Image (cartoon, rainbow, N blue to C red; front, side, top):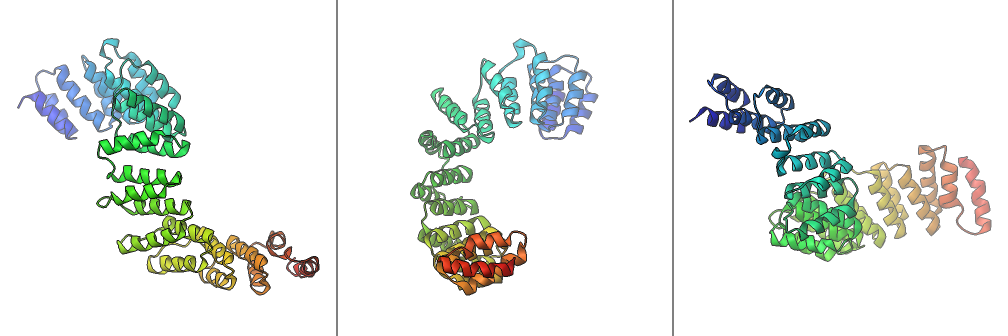
Length: 390
């Protein structure tokens, strides 16, 4: 094996010290040898090493310039990459450095710089387009991301899976019909079973009120779906107020051996709350906490209190809040429910808890949630009782 080949082999596999030793033992160093070592350092994101070697090189070719620009770009040093890019001979500027600059700026969130390079570039590949789309989506430019996707499709270029996820996310924000085009490409490339792409589609259709389509994507992901897939599907059905379906999915999820997390639990509780299914919400909470070890958060308890309150089961709600050590917001939710159904005994207990936890704001909270309910005569009596808490 020649010296050049050995240097390249060691460098490409990350064995930089061995590659350097072979280089130093070689009687003659060509630009190819130096560049092989440079490329290895760039792939290792060893910016200081790449810079030192670049300055040491007696001569440079296009590959050398590409390597140093990529090293800085991958390391997130956009300004330094730009300086080397400006110094690069015009005849050496291929698609590689232009793409590297677009990718670096987009990943750093510097979308104006990325746009400028993107617009000036005489040639761009799929990587640059995908980087721009991902950058726009990540930086809140959903409309621009969708526009770029449409333009890329017209150019006949094929987007990668990562950028497809970005397009799908952007479509869910702007409710774009481009989602159909993106999904068609996903089917064509047979990427629908990819867990990242599939999960993005589940979320997209959930946010746009199409839980049936979310379920169809989910069903085609039998071999790849994970907890995020289940969570997305639960969220999709909760978003459309399908409480019974959420409960059924929650059961199926557990039967498949996937433990629920706090997000999945919240979707089920939210759906139950809107449907007034207090008993089901309380049962889901108990199972998640005691059988699956889900950490019960304040929002879970508020949701259960609201669900039971809507069903008029305020005593059961009180028991749940006591059992889980609920915070002031959950007790205020119960207090409001007691006011709606005229349950004073439980309301008093809830009011006591509010006073204990937030004495400074308790009076106004109690008045707003409970004691202003009822007839003028009742309100007068309650105003007198309110003084006891004040």
